[in-house]
Image (cartoon, rainbow, N blue to C red; front, side):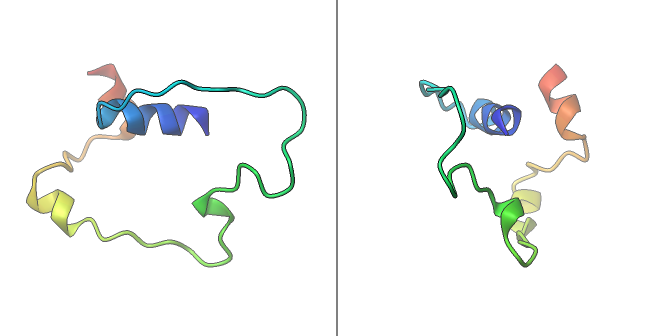
Length: 64
């Protein structure tokens, strides 16, 4: 999850201080959209209209 959040932040030019905790997380902490009982569907039409989608894979974006 850290890699995903860092990649999104980098793409948005967002900077924050990460505070990583030792030990087990409390119940429910760290849940993500992937834990949802139903799939989450995102409408990418605005991104396509703004030419944000380049057809490149996420890992290719990190390479520059």
